[in-house]
Image (cartoon, rainbow over all chains, first blue to last red; front, side, top):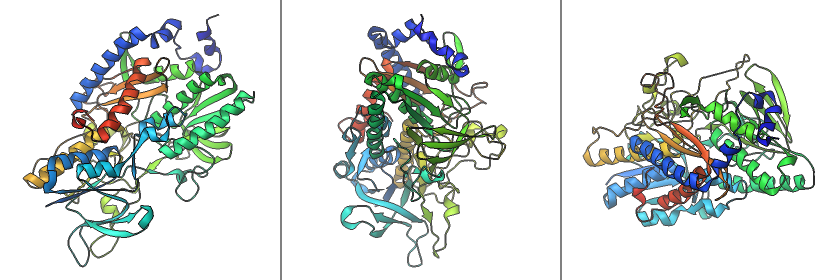
Length: 53
Length: 490
């Protein structure tokens, strides 16, 4: 049973969207990957902040 | 010696006052008039609302900070603006009413050379019957996370729901917007997903039905008409990722809705197709619509001239194009640049207090004529940048003369970095980190999406949560004017 796919059956609204699988969900709290994303997101934000001032 | 009076000590007003004092030093006066004795980092109120922070984590007293900075702090409500003085004097002034316990209600006149209206929003709960108490405050049928005190109360009520759910009693939670013209969908988004996250931790998620209701015509609008970002080689609408999160977390949604009435345990709402519906709840957090705080303007002869300074919604007129007309004619250049009032060159409005020219989202209404569309958000970063630009303009007018070129901060030429929490936890939390550039879409410069997709993005994960928590500490540090505070950008 793919637990992450159960919600597709709960409503038409849910059925017509996308739901992350186990890997995509896991990467959201994978510390090493998120440390890397922390650096990347901060750079992206700093660029937008710099463009805005 | 010139006197700048800033009405409001929130993100925008505090930024204006602190930079103005820094740049002008002791040569000129800076006065802040605000009814609150404390500064509130509003973005963290949602965490107070789920019991993950306490009130003292999100507020601090203003008086000692302003004393340290040399800013004259008046804990008072601004009541009226007299831009031409009165029969006895040509000096412009405002009337303020003390909110301090020892002289509450006492009024005084405060003259100014320059006035900045940074009063923020009136939380217009009474715009929806049953949402307010009929006296301008929140009613008893729902909760709110708009202020720290509201959020403390919201958590108390939420914990009662969790306690009932623990006994096996199924509970219904409803979160979203309490009127067809609300903004701040982002705050409600954060609250609903933080509730869901806390419910899972408490082991009660399976006994909760959690539902969203909002005036957005699509999930992910956030009052900005949504955004487009590049993901996996595709340019994608925020709608897709917003719907995905709701489906993933089993949160049903009602959109295109105007909440028309609230009673104990029930709301009535109208949809964009004109049909009327009801929804029951055990716990509801519904954001109120915003209006201007209710300042009036008085002419020299004592007659009311409020329409000269304010739009009917109470927000102050600035250098925006208020006759832009139909949606098809809207342009990025409709939006204000200097935030100077067109009638009085020594009056400015910053943050939520300025009147936007129109919506950002596409205007929509039901066949009954009910407008159901989000109004434009003014989040922390734009509010701070505008406050700083206004401070710079006023300081230049004082030191270099009134004809100096004013500083510019159009929302159509600035971006915003936002972090929307989806659950607090240093190891298991998540937040959607987003940048939008520019805030107000410019379809002439960026045909198709209205934004630069190289600088518009969104991503959900633990990193976003770390960023939001760091920003909490960083902006409170900055607001307290601790060493190096000017190095932290708005």
